Image (cartoon, rainbow, N blue to C red; front, side):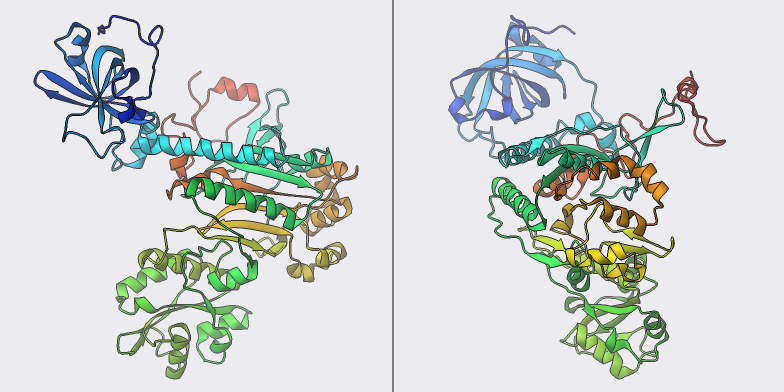
Length: 606
């Protein structure tokens, strides 16, 4: 289809304004706009179209009877056009208050169709479209004001971070993407080497050892907007590949790095929320677990857990007795507003607890008159049922939920239930953001299945000063006492950032590897280069990493991390648009020295 124009747009006639940026003060100006057809309305002799670009949409009036407007009759949704015309104020009573450009329109004098479009599978700004279809045609979804707005805000956030850290004396340094496979908690994405067949690179889960090597190298203050990769199951706020604001500082301790990052949070929230955060409170890990059941509590609502272990002793209730005999706990949650829940609704709560790892859920319900019902009324003495319920629901009404299990499991189950009620009962104050520093994490957690101690964060985290001797002694029975110089920044129930003071002494790092069950040979194989570097004079240093995607998600007021990533993966780590991952040819595999196991995948034709 040929376009009609007296001039050549783009090559000769340049865009003068973004369509969505036009306002009343542009009235009387001749402008050139370029963008997509968002809508078309034929009003007899005149055709009205909405031109959309990244700034928004503006109405354009075209007269197809004019020679320069002949192509107007051919316009369809998503055609790309260039228009030159006069901005004018809309006639009285015809303004569109729903649009930022609603006070004006363009009277077109010249039109050129730059590109035609097939009928799209969905309208660009239709938010009712299913996510899988939007992911398949992600480039169309990016045209929407919502998604393009998120991506532009992400840019502004990252730019603000770069400016802040640069002014604080940090140097941005890029670290390798092809690196060594090191155990950091999740599975590595491996990359086979063609030149060194049988050997593999790993995509970095984080630049952990690299940023520490930069401190050893004397960079003093480093940052990077780092791409990281983890082969793990995805969630709404997690992706297989993600970006983080990676920070490391020399000659500092925990309070120093917290102070810098607190200032950065305050700057971001002032700029993007218009809020003065003030000092961010600190909470010990054990207090967060006891009160909220998790180490990233959403502080925008109450509903705190209570410990009922002592009140549950000697009841004769086998479930309690068996758990307590194994040094387990009984913890509870009271919801005063939930006393009228049906048995079917309570059964759904049991399912939530079980999905979080609990074997079951004890419930006690008090109706409006205070009469109690419970599935365990026959197993527990009546006075004990009343005592437990009164402890959790002082009014005598409401719903009491109890979990008897190991500490971590009981906490996880009740935390899941707390969040469920926070959402269901609309207890969460969405109008504000609540921050918290979680500190005093355990250095280790015991892996019962593996029968060994594992690092709660990573093997480079320093123990607190008073616990260093326990680590050096190798007394495994006391490893559970050791607290780490580790800290997480939590916002609205999300871990926004996490970090630690690093081990900077080679003897202490060797003790850490030994505590984790790494033999001297294994430690040399995996971390020999790093251990040697530590022996050449290492400054005390500490670092933190913020999740760029999660930070942007919060500041964009969306609950899905995929919304703020240009080309995200699905929950199964697939790209529906590019159809990746995909099979590769047999020749490629042979060149890499790779043979697939029988029944695993298929190779593409050569």
